[in-house]
Image (cartoon, rainbow, N blue to C red; front, side, top):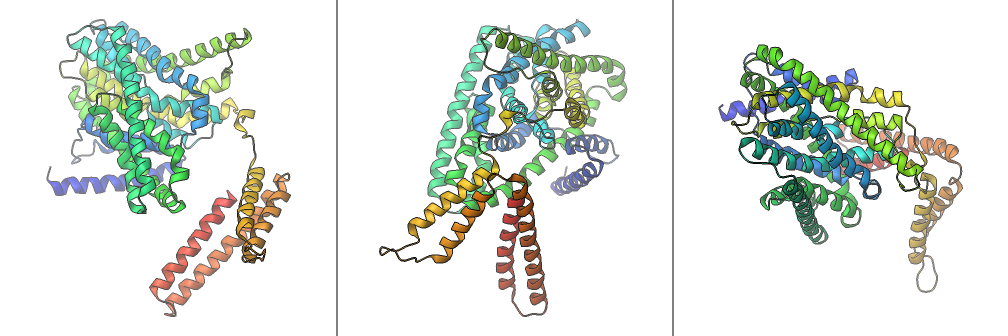
Length: 527
């Protein structure tokens, strides 16, 4: 393909991404569903070139920044609190699902070696971080469930990749050693933790010494790729290294980054993550034609692979339900015996967590790395794509309905120790205390009367509303609605002055920037 044609294809794909995202919003679909279906449909349009994904390149480009973004916004305190549950999903559920899928696959295709069946199970077993965040960010879940699902999607790839590597080695010519696999998993995890901590420590040094905001903003995605690549170069888990770095950076960003860097960096990350996520699903859809052609054409796929694929999708889903509800019964028994301290999920929450097992880019990329000599390679690649399609389209589009059906409500754990009014009162009091220390000179004379008056009134208002949340909400909405209306009027006047040539461009942009900050602050305060 000519370089100009490649560039035209990239631009066309961006247009398709925007169009499909708009369609998804209009139809109230998760964007991942529309992007995946749309990409698959476009792949068969005459004249569209066949997309052959380089699996290693796909993982390197897309996975690190998306993992970093997920880890950056992960609440570390809740992550630690539910770490046992996260490990149960990220390790236990992956191993159990691998065994179930391997058994079912061998039953369906007895000629396929056990090692190849295990490799397929390892490919399909880990829910995907990209697919999970693409769906979960559009639904409302209790914090415990969100933490479990987000933590699982960040950590489970390491488990699946270790099993996959050993299964492939056994299928191609070696044997399988469970002890060696467990040992390598521990080494990969500890090594990934060490690399992630080292990279994040370097970032902290740079963030505290560099004052150029543009450099600090651009460094954040570079940290994700550096963590992943360095981890892989040292033959440890690049996924674990990236997640570790993201957790550390997210924890320290409030103290080492300025407000301006956070504001501009957040805007940058929103656009970057949107483009990466959307491109992943469109590329997966685009790859359908190449997968079909390699497997012998659509007729062969439907005639020979449709039934086994359906059985594997059902067994994959059933295995997740079995593990989660089985673990919940064990927790319940431990609690009744007075041994366990972790509360079971319950039927409703367990159903939601079981249904939220979408697969995505990692599943397909790992399947495409299968060596040509792998027995049943074409079937395994087609199955990987079919599972992605089924889980993203069916589970992704119905997860909101399942959550509503389950009737999940916030629990006491979801409520923070201090509510919003109380936190605002504490914040205002802390600001007033700081201002009072510097509001007077050595002789006790007030040198900052306006600031002292402003923060005194803020603390008084916040305290008065600390126990009346309903009245506070109504008055604050009206207060900030008026501010936004004033900002709109000011912006209109600025434009009028500029259009009548009474102010120049520099004055317009400067004052408009101030109005934008006022509007953003008011909108943020309203929410």
